[in-house]
Image 1 (tube, rainbow over the protein chains, first blue to last red):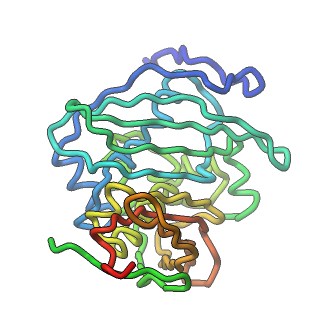
Image 2 (tube, rainbow over the protein chains, first blue to last red):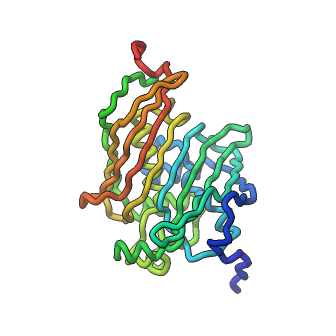
Image 3 (cartoon, rainbow over the protein chains, first blue to last red):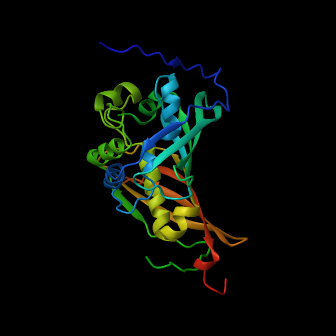
Length: 139
Length: 150
């Protein structure tokens, strides 16, 4: 049986800049760090938080839409996270804009660990018409 | 690890960083973040449905991770991991089988209270010479990591 999807269908026009999401917490494990480092082929990669996509995780928990494509991403490094610590993430809608007839949403998130260490800040611009990728760049 | 002390000048070029993209690497990246569901990154059918592409693509966040590596290697982890930034725009999809090369050029050096902010332009190209991403990065390099005459 498929569970009902009770998320809100995205209404881009109605989406409010500044909308905040529920705080998200997760335990960062050494396995997560090791797997991230293998994936990015960098044994010293210091911010495995990137692959957790925490800036859009709570958006995706609240809204359903046609999907998205990452158009731009900014990342600020403060302190590399430590395995075994719980990370707390606060995320919000930082902006939205229309460019060349396409809708974009900008999400922003700040991560802090259980000791209060500021970890990082990520700002992502997502194009909300993902089929544009196939139209523009083909197969 | 020793302290990396160096001078920075506009026009300095960063050592390039080359990455060979594979589906296995993409799967590891996605899995490390807890994404186990089929996605446009890990499943061809989902990519066709969501993006209209014939195959999977790599998340832009992988390119972001590589850009961080480019800059961390240049500035040193003691500097970059505590005061580094990257802002990258994704211009073309990166796919399994692609070889992507990250390059960087120092575009600005400005004094701040306790050091210097060094700005870098970042460019990403695939094996065909297509630009897949462009952006900027920076780090605030503390005085202790700069030559004494700066």
